[in-house]
Length: 341
Image (cartoon, rainbow, N blue to C red; front, side, top):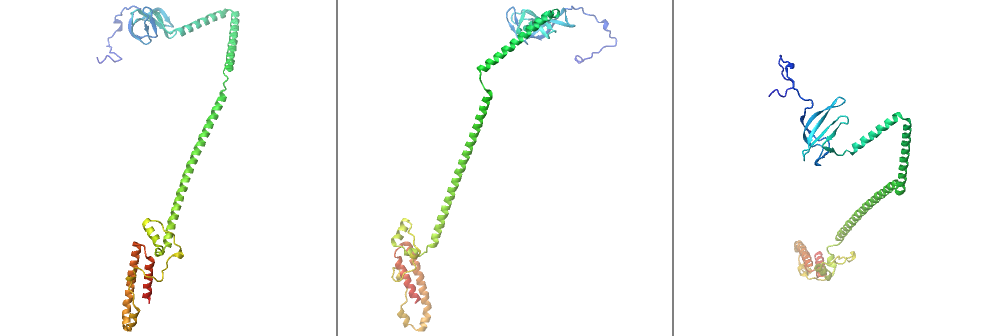
């Protein structure tokens, strides 16, 4: 089994091919081969269609007394797939094709038959012109006349089409290009307008924000300037009703001018005058000089202490009630004048 696939067989040294007996086989011997249908065909017996490429187990034989340029011609026998009728066809090396012989008809042969008919007519014409010069002249005249008729018919068809279809393709293309150009310009204008509107909105918003920021800065600066210009004692010069209203309802009081601001009042006694300790001038006259020297520092410290106490009491009373401001200021001024004496 190892040597069944080799190309060269072993021949012994005493091999003599003349001693091999020759088989006497007939020349029209048939072989069974596997093939496919070379074309579409229809069985004449049952009308079954056999398509191209269908596989068959066919019998093959060599056609006797038929050759083409030394090439043998083979015949094939197949059976219909429906009625088992025998169908035969053979090779056609002249046309590089197969020719149907018996049992079926070949389909789709109109083009091939037309070509064969044209070839036959052309061959007959050449045979006639070969020995008859007048026939050649007649054929040329017919050909020229037929060619002129074909050209005239073609020209008439062109004119008819031009009359019926008055379509200016160049004009249509120009119109389309113009419309496309206008559309692009319109889109460009819309984009520019939208961009401008967006920029205007952003600019207005920024201006508003800057205006609001400047207003806030001005208000803050005016408030700080107003707070700097106001003095702590301005509240003492306002009326009682204004102070109470401002403290209770949170209403802003009227602006006080600089010449209306308080610098102190003269005379008058207030409710807090009892808190101020005043020195009697008579007692000061009766004391001896030594005692005056020793007591004066104490009296001065006492007067300062009483003055500080009066000031604290004045601030407390103003913050709580906001009333009798003028009387308290008068008492405070009296105590200051007595201490200075």
